[in-house]
Length: 554
Image (cartoon, rainbow, N blue to C red; front, side, top):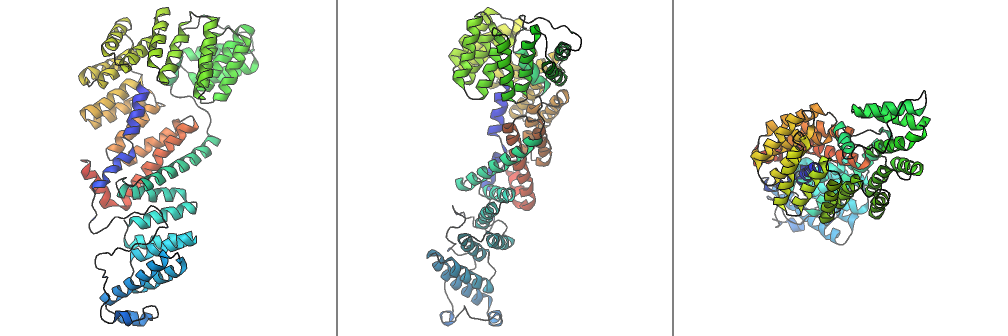
């Protein structure tokens, strides 16, 4: 539930919403236009100061052949009229798809008047002619004259994309979106498409050199704690220089929560080979660490070998179900539980973890039944009680859920987890003082657990509006668990919403280092790119950025 809450927070409060209020920003004297295609027809509307009427003998003058000296002798009004006449001819030719001739008329119009519209219209011609370098140059000229000219920004973004300059293209599309308040779906889709492309490529490059790593110790501990003690396995005893000795080291390291050391020792134990009572167990543990590192293929191989050595090893079936679940193979996932039940229908862990699968897939009734059965068989697992209360709440049985949590609090009065999750449920019911009390009690019971600090921070920030205290709590969570990605994400989000994007960027970049899978890295990179764009936008469009901050009350 904690991870779901964080996910919802990030999804509903991301950087785009910070910028969306730009819809209220009005730039004096600037008409904000947008074309659905970068090579769409040129503008025909007039800018303030232009005239649609030719004055004096304008109709008899051949503006195409006037020399620079003759043009210089014209009045400002005459030059504007001449430029308008030439632009109109260019528009007519553009409508006939005579791009080259249209560009020639816009070029001539620019000799009379340096106007961003003429540069942008000529860029549209070059776009249709496939000359992206010239599009880029003309859009730059247009934006030099009018930095918030939406058409030019959009056309330059498209040209940059075609030139392979994806990050620069992304920035231009992002600027268009912010300036238009994210009201134009075409621009927003272009931005999202490029964001995905940039993030995917960077994630792919990073994955080539990134060493596999475990998530935070809090996450790893929670995963191992979701299984009851496995009494079917004998306690390993060191036996000379064989793999047994390393497996003993791995088990000892796990007890002290030194998971990196445990993983290395387990790898060595499997490599050397353990004696027959331990090899299946060692493969199970190695597969678990591989799974937690995001290596599903290696994990599946380990669980397969573990089951091959010991076909009645129930826990390996349960853990193998997690691999199939991650691969999106629901039928294979559920089949693992059926096989496990056939071996030992009284194993309470089977029902708890099957309940988790059903919960994730929206089968709340089925999940509730499995959690209940898990508790009936063995009521010692705190997470079974927590998840039963959570799913009852999901089903709308609030009173029953509250009763389940209150009974669990009495049974596990020293459990930080039960207080933390109950606090989330209370917060969801807007019982803020009671929720804060639960989160605070959880931090007292387990000062080294980051999640209660994070949940208290979110409640303090969103419910009370105390950003400084929320930031302090998130930093405290990072102190107790420096690898806690949830703390990093929460802290970055709060800082970003508080108008402190440079500080937020530091934590989003940290999230890249903490990410394990390609999908996690891609998401982290997307936040980094978005935040960089926001910082750059504030520098290049200070008036807009200041207006945004005023609207946000900063």
